[in-house]
Length: 341
Image (cartoon, rainbow, N blue to C red; front, side, top):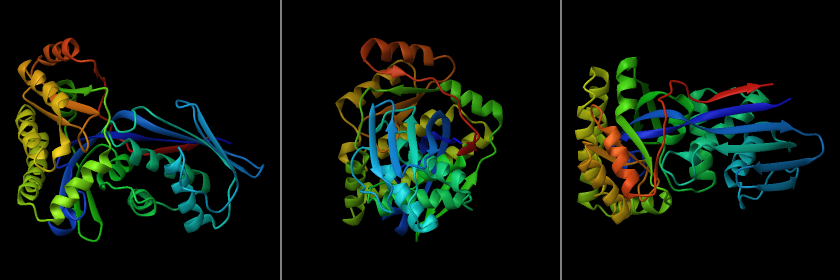
């Protein structure tokens, strides 16, 4: 028997950072995101030899443990071990034996929610194998708790819900970790136009999102009004962009992205750097009307809105001046998928 799962990565289109406590607890956050055709994959092969094997073919790393109810949350497979520990403590109450293999279509620190999406994928595979009675909200909430509370990894809440639900979603983040996911019924031609005009560019750099988010949290806790006002503006931007998508006012998205990028840089100083600024300015000079760094900032993927046929000039300019690469993708309508063979 083989159990498989896959969960999609996401583009945070607007409102990023307002899902992070304490801002979301005090003011309430709102984010617009959409999943794309890049995935985190998990395969579980049950064993009966009393061992647990974690494998990453891409990294060429494997870790083997004797079956136990608790595994040390260190080493390369911290996320997978965190999921296993929670599965045992909440559901099986006994040790399991299996081999688990994982793969993600994008590098860690690339700004597409890779870590949280991988947690959702792993959790989904366990739920499929053990026939756990978990709905979408249950899986997303549990993935959030594993990553943010059990493993004490700094970050927000949007990635776990995006990977689980899939599609275009307007998400509201309220006090006491309450999350409301509002799926958006966007006409297919509007989605296709957005995918055509939104150029996804990998800068060949990565970021440590925890450090950036810690700076954001510090600014909110200290009452730094510049940062807090920027988050207010980003939250409003998510509402405005939602209306543009629903009404088909697609070309206005570039302007919203440009305004949002200016506000996002006010949240904390680590969000941008000289390379990212140079890439952004080059894209704008070549015809893009707006863009942003995907995720927390500091590196990874950027995306730019390129109206009409300007994406070709933007791609050419970026290729000529920088060593990154354009990544092809499509928007997806489904979230976490699991199956057994």
